[in-house]
Image 1 (spheres, rainbow, N blue to C red):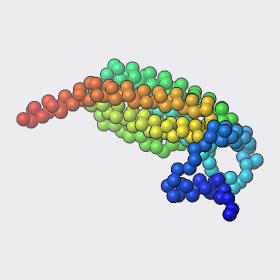
Image 2: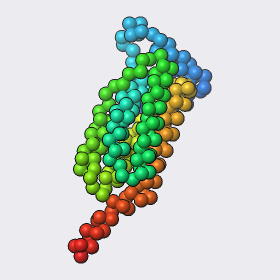
Image 3: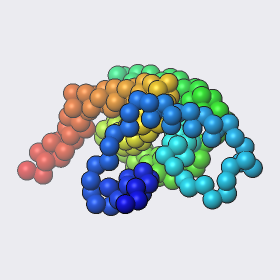
Image 4: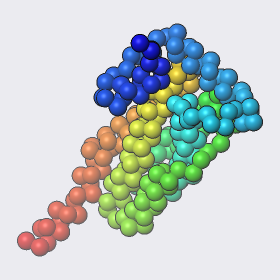
Length: 221
């Protein structure tokens, strides 16, 4: 009986909803070597019919996030200016400094892959930031301005957390440990930033924004 090729066996396992065997450290090491060879080859040297793989998805995701972090870095100053609560203003200023460092970390990751750091237009982050801009226009001069800023910023953070979580898993599976560690550090910062925004919102900002609703209810009584 003919032995089923490994790639076909994995496809069959996926289509049947079965888990395929986890890669060993040796297999991940081999994957890392293949990624390095692929990165070192020129476009002309690659077979035209080469199928897209996890390393290609990793590179695509990194380009998305490089574009996203640069857009976020440019968008934060307006939010900082609009913020009233001093701790919120400080948290946004600190995270902007972190974002600058994240851009540099991503450039290091591209360098480790043997690639030029280059962003790729990300419709998702563009949409999230455009919505944040609209919310600032609608609520920027209201008692709910700080709550609206957190509302917008957490949409950004949650997008980043999901993307970096996936990219970390891709790097892990490909045996790219140094790249995984860089992404892990960024992911930890994003989770911490989201946690700080939660703390501020639930600690005082949402309550302050709701005071007008209480006053309006009393006036109507």
